[in-house]
Image (cartoon, rainbow, N blue to C red):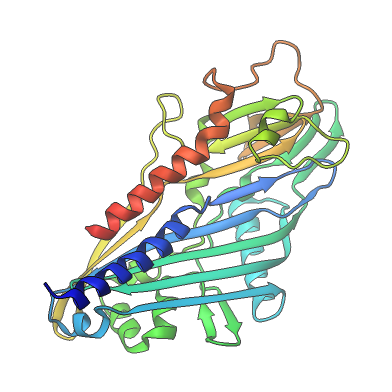
Length: 346
């Protein structure tokens, strides 16, 4: 037995598992929307996994087998191209959703990993955007309470988002090809000149799956904040305890089944055929709103009507299991982690 080869395989597997599971445990959207504040800092996380399948002994196998590359950077405020990124995102919100919601500035964290094996290259992306958001309250303290816009959650930004980083220079953080362009530019060009170009330019910041009707989200009204607080899901501001929690991502008979999105293509690299497989985990999200809220459809989308307490006789949880909402993400993220590991071995 070749002890060195076994040891190398173990090291690569450890790096792979650590890297991909950290990406798998990313919820795509979390937001705390206070009607009183009309300002929030949601967390939007784009996750994608790619696999390039090649023949052992091919040029790509010789180039990548046994190698691990990691790209990491963080940008804050409006510098380094962030102002244009925010402007592009705001334009998408206004155009797609006709929503007054606006991002003002943001923090961007980018993580890209390439792990080479004898017959495949595994690539993972995690791009986290934390903007400062305003104007989501459409009406404050009206006869039915406050009205909150929920449509901004499901925007897809289709254009390239180019930022300028001190270490890597200009990076397209919205297209998968951006990682290849800064690490392996020659391979990037070959992929763009192949039928796999559509996968390589498929936007990471595509949250349309989170736009599923709010009827398909789990709901819990916690009048004291004690359940959500004990689960570590709710940080109430001073003077506010009641909270409405909406959670998306757990499959059930009522909410339906959520599956990953997969795409496949092929490319010719160095005269040899390469299979390109892309997968995006099932949608996962959580929105918290202080007070009691109920969702309602409008001519353009969906809103939340918020009051301080639930009207008498109102159903305060879906499915009859209030605690189930708080367990959604533990079970769901565990399932996603298993999904990632299975995908990485195919």
